[in-house]
Length: 147
Image (tube, rainbow, N blue to C red):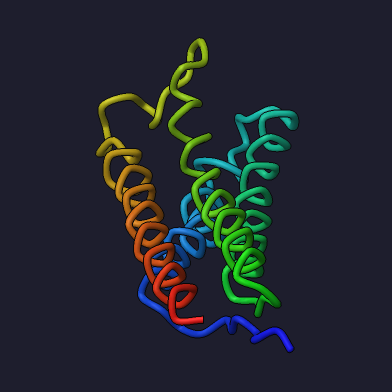
């Protein structure tokens, strides 16, 4: 009989989960206001893409949390779930940073009026995912060695 790898609470999973939850909730906190989704000056297509980004953050958060916390039937399954959970938790932040490379793109409106949000949220979020991933991989290696 195969020993079931549980979705137990571990520091690595918690560290990955925090930026995932922030990616799921943060866009609604930051954008559900008169400067973004309720901005009367924005054309409908701009609002569509803002809404798409908010929904993408929520979807990636859900996917990350589902993968991270579901039980696995094997060590290979636990490692694959960790891999996909960490990638899902990181993708929102990677795409947010990559958006700065597009023509005419700026992190804030108007430029220079606010703190650069990627430095405050995106980079630390990616660091948490990386640290959490490293800790959880180490935990799984130790658990695999005891089997």
